[in-house]
Image (tube, rainbow, N blue to C red; front, side, top):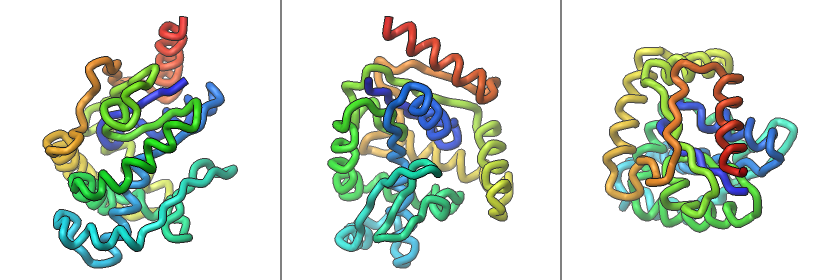
Length: 220
């Protein structure tokens, strides 16, 4: 079984992709982490994430791996575990900017498609159902209001001890939504056969139960 979960930042894609993978015994692949890792690398190199001429030469120095442990999926950038470093609002914006560059998308496209071929997987991102895994058995486009998503991200970062501002997170999220929606290459829009899933008023248990019911109904 192949399940694609797309949607804007903070909608809970990664959380529920992980939970579904565990519940259904599937492999979880967080593709957004790959873009975030490129964003982190570009930031460290002092390059402009919007400037393809500055970013593309840097890709020759990038080696990305996804590893799995008791802590779940870990992202390894040139031998360094950057799984926690890539979750800040600043890196989210870098990821949004580099994801607009055709060279970056081409660089990561084959990596993601190779992961999709590994059997039964749950993948989440912005264009999984439209570009990476258009043959997915089930496609969710998960959404929630910007305010709800900002509160979730604020809580997540605070729990990790990362200093942040709710207002800054909300502003960044609204800007990133606009960037992702309006980019020319693989915009973050639902696939024609995607299930629009709004979990603004649901907790984790309610969301997971609703998704499982949908999946069970489609499998039948």
